[in-house]
Image (tube, rainbow, N blue to C red):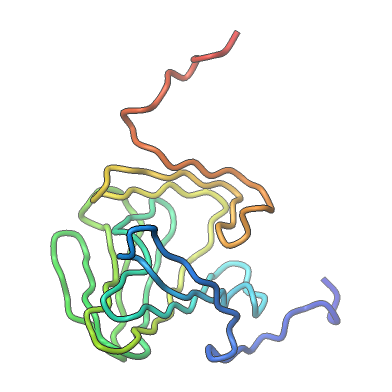
Length: 171
């Protein structure tokens, strides 16, 4: 990348380009902005998330490879971590280490009356597996950017009971 094409290494969160995410049932809704990529960060990711009152941005999950931490900027909420729930507010920093199983699964819920705003900071991996203990799903991603799905990569979301044999369909 030439100096002319290099992103500016500074971005105020108020200037982040936000996109809507959410689930069909209405429990999940947020606006997210990719800060890390926007400032040219390659080994550490940073995402700005704005969650309206009563909503969650993402399902309860644990990454096998990606370590995350969250910094609450504004608002209040609940941090589900394993089988515990912790109240959170502006200034709190939350750990979400990589691992497996319910004990390290996490989710941030806005239980307040104003938007909950936070930064999610993580190491970046081209490949990760993610477990979703509440629904029994898992996801495997490799070189896939879910904010730009048309650019390709591999993404599979499923359940273990629908798996096929390693040699299934091979000749």
